[in-house]
Length: 52
Image (cartoon, rainbow, N blue to C red; front, side, top):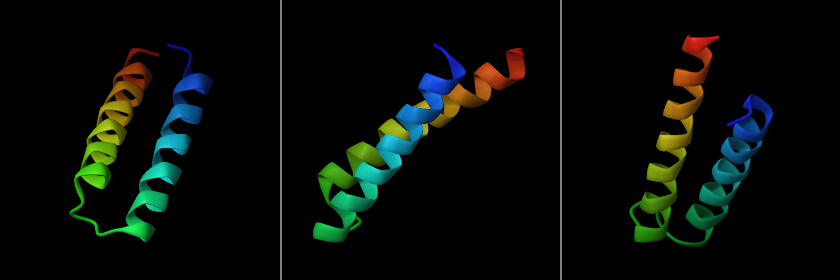
């Protein structure tokens, strides 16, 4: 995955998580699922940076 695409995906996911949390609670299932997705994207990014 291209670094720029990954960074955009991270930012989009972060924004979506904040939007969801602003309309519900931080413990809402959708917010938690988005947080997990964000964690996965951040881990991918970290691994990508270690390789380069």
